[in-house]
Image (cartoon, rainbow, N blue to C red):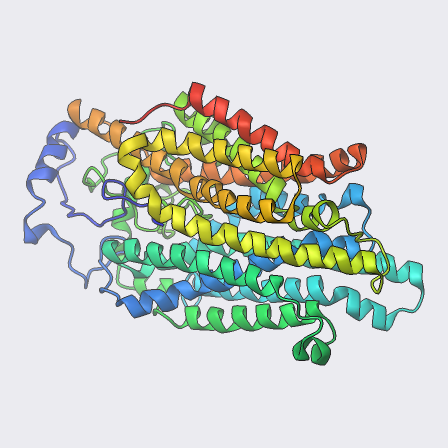
Length: 567
């Protein structure tokens, strides 16, 4: 899927140095009149910091190699989503605490996400700005995955005391989950920024399509590996248990595809580009020239030397919904030319956003809360409620084997979800002319709420697997519709601004997408803080699916009443 459209892309535009004494309205008209003139394009020898110089065209093969990292990341994500709750319960974590493991990573994300994004923008490594961060976070993912899937085995081999072994196993496994989740969440921003830095406008579109396709395939294969019964296979006997087999495939897949990604497309070091001269930083001054409204980070600069065309934006501003780096592209010598995105500026932008954007964020929060309630604990629901197994039983008991069988079938359900998500993402383009964005948004929430209601009322194996295909509709909806609505809202605003004469500065897409991304992390915090206590109070995992259904149907009502329709 792609969340960039023709009117919101980061496409480089012709730039002309104009007299500061001229009126802003006439400047805008002059810039429009000159868009076809070759003389006003910046020469590549002068250069800018990933600004106005268009990178060379990339082949489809290069873009696929670049996107393979998303296959590996989603593969490992699927393994985590499928096995984190069963593994934590099997090492003895109390049921009232098992959702707390999801709290730490999103809290760290809210606090550190803008900081790490800004740091990668200003990295001066000879290997480039993004790849050092991608490599570091990728290695942390491997460490987290190792502790998560092998921690119990290692601790059991080292410590004989049963009580101490149980406590230490819980600590090590939880540390692995948090480390993996933190690294996997944060690595997405540098990956998207890397793609935007090294690709031309058309290649960004194709690259995001490749990322979306490989993300869906990676999730499907990850759940498929988890659904296999590796315990009785040759690999299971050789490596010790099914968790070690799954770790072997996950670590191998991630390591190979991460390496391919890092060497897929060359990245220019920041120092090498900046060494071309002080003029390299001049195009960044327009970041400070925007007026202090919602979605603008810089202060109004005096006599800005350049005027962007109506839809131009600094090329490393992430307009992708999952982008974590919403910052300026490089730090120029003049401090007023660029301001770094901080948590404070992000919160200020969210508070001051227009009403229809705020309603979109609330609906996104409700959707992700419902989706995470179901997806993070779905395999545990299959093992305990559908198959009536017991994760706390002895590992060689019938009750525990039955629970493991339920977890495997739950992985098949999640695999069906991943495939249906990719299919519905393709189907959306044909449904859009008939029902519109708001209609698709409503249908996604309603179908998910209906499916989870039926699963909680009739926990049958066949019915549950069939209804898993509906989960994919919700997944596709959450990843596409809100960002398409943002694109349409901003297109309307740009058209209105043009009708007024173009005297106002357009608001960037980056902050809007960052606000939606924060809703995902906030939803994870809400689920982690409240769901464990709710399960403990009711003494049944079925409340997880009922909660997902309730919140999703509330989201339907909210969408119908408060989401602005776009023609």
